[in-house]
Image (cartoon, rainbow, N blue to C red; front, side, top):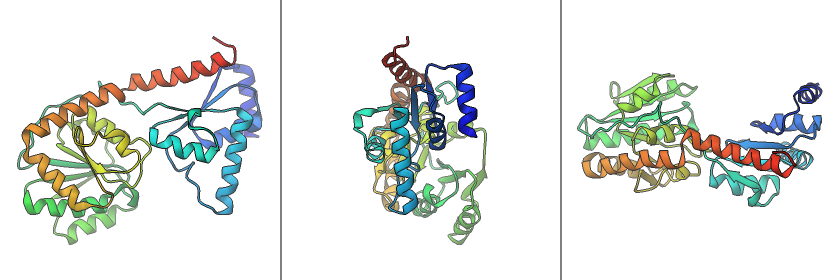
Amino acid sequence: RAAALLGRYVGRFRPDVIEIHTPTVAWVAAWANSGIPCVQALHGYGSITRKDSIKDKAVRVLDRLTQRRLKTNFIVVSESMTKVAAAHFSLLPACFACVPNGVDLEKFKFTEKMPDRSSSILMLGTLCSNKGQTLGIRAFKAVLDTMPNVRLTIVGEGFDRPMLEALAKNNGLEGKVKFLGRRDDVPKILSQTHILWQLSESEGMPMVVLEAMAAGVPVIGFNVRGTRDAVANNETGYLVDHGDTESVKQATVELLRDESRYLNFSLNARYRAEEFFSFNGMLDGHERVLRSVTSVNGDE
C-alpha cells in the first residue's frame, strides 16, 4: 500500500531525482519501481552493520536487491563509513560520495575564552551506554584530584539518567556534575564550555562535535569511527584509545593548564568547522551528487 501511494505521488510530481534518508523508504521505493533515479544518504552505521543472524542476513540481501532495482547512488557522511557501506551493499567504494554533515556557523558562533580553575567540561547526547557518560563520570572524578574546581555538565535525556545520577552521587560528585536534561539552548551552553568530551563507542558524523568546533570548543574523544573523522588529533583536540579514562583525564588537565595551546586548539577548531563542516558546504555536496545523477540520466 505504501509503495502504491508513493508511486502515485511520484507519478504526479515527476521529480528529476528522489533523495532517500531511511532504508525502509528505499524498500518502498524499490517496490514502487517509479523509474526515477535515487540517491540514498547513509547517516549512521545501524542500518549497514549487520551480524550473522538469519534476520540480519535477510536484511542485507534485501538492501542489495533494493540498490540494484533502484540503481541507487549513495551519500555517506564520513570517509570511515565508505568501506562499511561498500561491504554491506557489495559495491565498490567509488560508488559512495562522502558529504560530511554541516553545522550552521551563524548559529554556533566562535566564542573566545581562556581556561581557568573553574573551567567547564560538557557531554551532550542521549543518556545511554553507547554515548559513554559512565566513563565520563569516572574520568571527571580523576580530573578533580588535580583540578578540584572544574565542572562537568551533562546535557540530554535517556533511560540511563537515574543510573548516572546515582553513580555521580556514589562517587561523591553531587553538586560537581550537573544534569541539565534536554535543552534547546545548546549554542549558549557551548559559549560557556571550555572542553567537550565525546566518549561514544561509535558515531556516523557526530553533530555535537561539529557544533562544538564551530563554537571554538576543543574536543577530547575516543579514537573511534565518526569522532576521528571530525576531530584533528593534536590540532583541534585529542583522540585517545576507547575506554582509556586516564588518558582523557591527562589530556583534559594538560589542555586546561596550557593557555597558549588551548587558544590554538580553539581557533583551529573553528577553522576546521568553516573549511570542512559548514551547512552550506553540506548543501553544495548534496546538490552536486543530485546533479550528477540527473546528468547521467539525461536531464539538466
